[in-house]
Length: 315
Image 1 (cartoon, one colour):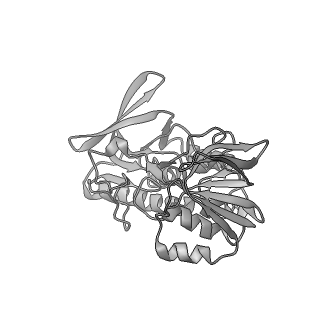
Image 2 (cartoon, one colour):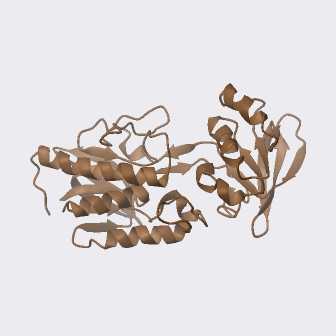
Image 3 (cartoon, one colour):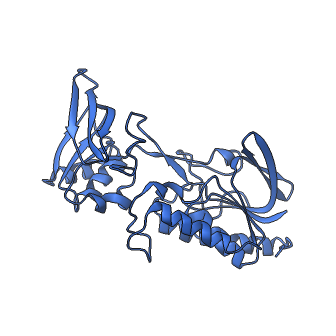
């Protein structure tokens, strides 16, 4: 029996584990890998205290910090398939290589993050982190003076265009349909900036091309069938994300997008004893530093929950 089970090994999961360990909570961290979505980034410039660090190196630091508490934190490299309530406690079921396991805990911290919606076209995976990006707030500074396209005409896409204006030399906006779905006021603002070289409607991306790095995209006009190619140095894919919340969809309240609803003061969910932090939640700002901070709140709140519930703390 664990005091707390943490699901996820990104900035939220690792921060929660460190703080849980410092509170002497017997902790289980379950993650298939450390680092979260940022592990593919070659140069992260906004992790506080590290002006430049690769996603891989940051992931190694995450893991090393958690492993510094071997007496308090167990780590399992498994895939979580379900979380269930069992009396006053919780059961987390996992799978790894065809073997199924179950662990029990007095409290749960959900930090499994989200996965970016992808185009699913040739070249997307090959050039991920080599010109293909999914976070304009994180990666826009890496494209200084470059020719960049944003794929997606919703609010996320329009905001990505705005994020790129201070850095990129040219910005193109590509939308699969014949209209932009983002707020009209933002549409009006981006059209005023001379760095926006055009909005390409009915653009069905068919391939991202390049050699070592991205050199362009191929797309088909969805209305006419005409095939085109656009030379680029980078492609920001902003077509939304999918939170990894399926495991608790019957336990906690989710919003219309599948994000876990939390009380931002304590990172608590609708279910007592279950807390959440990071990209899996309905917090609007999907940033590593915010995820870590919210996870600290979740760990401290879980500690408080265990004390108030008169549940014996193992540590």
